[in-house]
Length: 482
Image 1 (cartoon, rainbow, N blue to C red):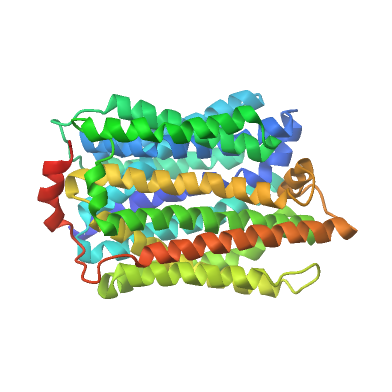
Image 2 (image 1 turned 30 degrees about the vertical axis):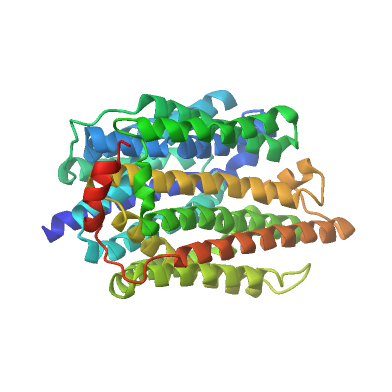
């Protein structure tokens, strides 16, 4: 039984690794893709954004689908779709085909991500989940690192199409593991909440698309109206979910403080922390004049620290309580940002490495403990829905982290210059560098504030907490359809 659990965990780890790699692997390949496909940059940027948008808009729905039709079935289908989408992306003859293929690939990533935490919760008892989530968190952090580094190496020495082809053999290994060892947990009596699903999809798409376009083109009434319309749709969505027979999101579950504040912390952490990655790349490329590949290599020490420590931190959170580790982890990330604020036009780059190690240790403490807290706050029959919601909120945070990094940094320089800095094709000179550095510091301060708020929300939990949700199950079962 122990061996089977480890093989299940290996499949989940591979899935998280692949989907994480493809959130970042395209970044350093964008200039080459733009050139070889002869596409405008504002079109090429959607090769990244469409993937993030699909993740943000669909993850909750696909977690619910796993509850209904079996998490194993949906998880396995995700591997196959991701593999096909990767092959199509590598084959793309033009930019619009590539964007479409990336959307399809993103849908496969959605099926994998939405059910991953639920599968771990299915196979691991509460006392072991911190360690298990530590390992899957390691896959996510390694994937983020590999995506940046491999994107530069493969594009430079082999060709940009192979940043997608590399997913095929890795995905097949994960699929085989899942096919052999992950059994289904079907909920035949449940139904799909179509009105809630459509409403949530529309509102998230409106908010995400409008915000991205504002970041790329500046404030425009059309895009601002889309964001406002998406926010307004939260009201009918709330009432739809209150009266649905089998709601997409069981609102009564949020009466559990552990679940509610853990989800809020995960969202704010994604917004605050991931924007720092984009900001640092812009600093290193635009102000210090480093190549994209060299810039990414400087961030590797922090990711290595996070990857090595995540399983250990997960085990410690199992013993000593997840709320302590998650809140301390976020505070360490915030302290890393304080270190980054001392970066100037010519300060030693060892300062950046120190900051990345501090934030990496903080991430190792936060991710596994917060995942364990979220899943312990959910009843077993809603593991898929809550797992999907967790990933949805984290993906929304990733999307908006990009918006924050570009928008705030672009206050100091023209927007097109900010994009060129992000890609590493422009080095700023003289007074422009000083102005852009001020924008970078402003963006870092914004991220610091967001992380402090996340740390506060992560501490608002019951002092006496057991890592199983047994006392809440009866209450949620009777209230879920209200």
